[in-house]
Length: 486
Image 1 (cartoon, one colour):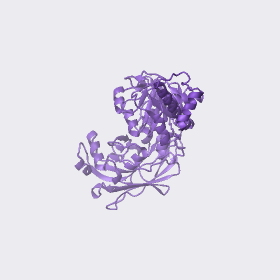
Image 2 (cartoon, one colour):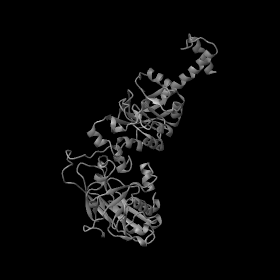
Image 3 (cartoon, helix red, strand yellow):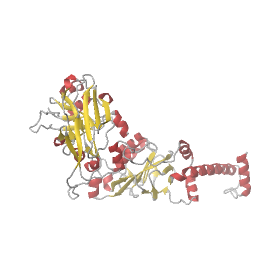
């Protein structure tokens, strides 16, 4: 592939789109309202037939088959109608990246996606003037198996819109390259794998040819911890890199045991009644203490998704506090019906969530949030309507007291141990944690006790003394059983 710009044959800049295909957005569980972008180093550009190294000490090198646009003439604040006129050519691209370095990049993707050889392009250019940008196709093969196949008809944002939008913010210069995002099917590749990407025009049959890249192991030394951040992975990164938990070889999400019937019963029964039944079974340390509801009349029922903060330390916050950190990962990946439970050590001197994250949780279908720390943007969070239980309000951001540390582990919140998948129930009295194995037994017993208490209250309202009635002696019990039976 030939480039017009620069003595090295490299583009002046390579700009990549984050999520742009509906199929990929559905896979990730989030659909952007507008395109967003990141830069890749022009030194990452490579041609067809070469190799790419998986860095030493990493496991999650992933390919992304994409349509690349080559700018033919400078574009600065161009409109949608004229944007495609500034595109000279279309070709195939492989937007390679290492998920192990995403956290270290803090959102920039510099280290994860700009290594040498991480942007293969080509091998041939398709004249943009001869094709319909709405009828382009991108396909990818790994070791001969077709793994990606989508068209620009599946884009959330048309190619011309991407060009026009970028031109509002930066001048697109002749020879610049835009990587327009990848459809579903991107996954992890390992040394020995051969990846092929092809772009073709459905209306004319013009093709970029097969862009071929072979993965090899990096024979060099691992990253030096003295110099900077080291690779790190967790199950969230593995799931996103592979495309699914199943593909990553991860177990299914913890079973909540919450059928629709159980959830409906939990909606009816007060937390106080559940607490009484748990205490009868030896569980007297399962209340999340010190938290109060933003919406006292709302009921909270769901399964726990956990997040842990550790005390603030400048060097740790520099490594773990920015970018797509553990806090953002939890709020961005919470499943419908889950309650985000946050360990903040009872420290209320800063916020542990604000309105943007609360809105993201509600959009994802979360059942609510429980934190033994503070809430920032308290009034705005309340307006969102998501059930939130917190220890107080505070205007400061996270980094004043906390470092977001771990998603998905066992935590301590308000004096109670909480594990992912535990059942969380809250009302105006407070929040309680129920082991999944006990939910059915406890809720049925609590409902039965509620019926009994309602019957006792009716007798008291009729004038009966509580002596021998609350709790019921043998005579009252016989009457109650008889009426219930009848």
